[in-house]
Image 1 (tube, rainbow, N blue to C red):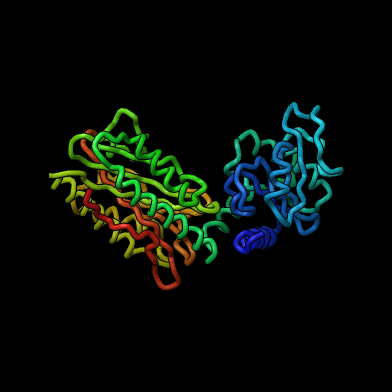
Image 2: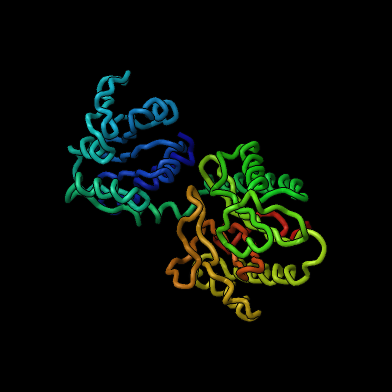
Length: 377
């Protein structure tokens, strides 16, 4: 297990023990990536000083889990209806259970004390099953896990920076494809491919490419029919996943001649972005960062077009704590990595969003992204 992953596991274990939990159960893709560095497992990681550490995985993932992970004893279970399958699994490694919660419950049956389960991102039915099979030993550990993951180690920050560099390199390459007749969907596909060619696991989220009035839709889905022809606005929101850690950046620009009003709008949004960045730092309320961006746009008569929060944490998930929103109670701490991404959206006309990733340091903040905030296309 790499140092970043072993450090993550020990931070989780220590937090659980401080909360009086004898066993911590981690399920969900993001938690397994955080602790194991492996994606695509239907599994749960069981951490217990008393009973040992186990990775409980579906039968079809048993060999993948055994080959890709170190330091954990791997156990397999049957998914519903699969108990008739007879597989080449070492004696003692197959739990006679037909669900993940049932397999975990059987494994921790002899362990003492409460069992914490991070159930926040599990399907509601699976979370309910964990509660039922563990009975009065069940504790919801979602807040505990989130509090650990929100502050990044130096190794995690390096992985995030690698994801950013991959994404930026791919974006610069994709700009060369921003020519007459290219569709939103084609450009999104090429950008995704360029990130993967550069070593990314894939995009952090489905790449957003928007042309013309589609830029006014914050979560626009790229369209094959929307193609570049006349001069107009272009917005790209994209990110890469590198070794499980994510990046998130947005740029908006006018392509071709004209566009003076749009370019001024980009400058206004960049001013809001820079004021928010200057506000961020250790001990600062996340809501104050949001207020810095929102008040800047308010002075320009644009606040009514800013319809989302100013930012969010990024790590093994694209949206993690803390959240930079008007009603947020979060306080920024050294080691947090957040986006700052004010936007202005005028339905039927166009929209602008400019987004940076920022590390909160002991003395202030460091902008991790490096592309120019205003682009000439």
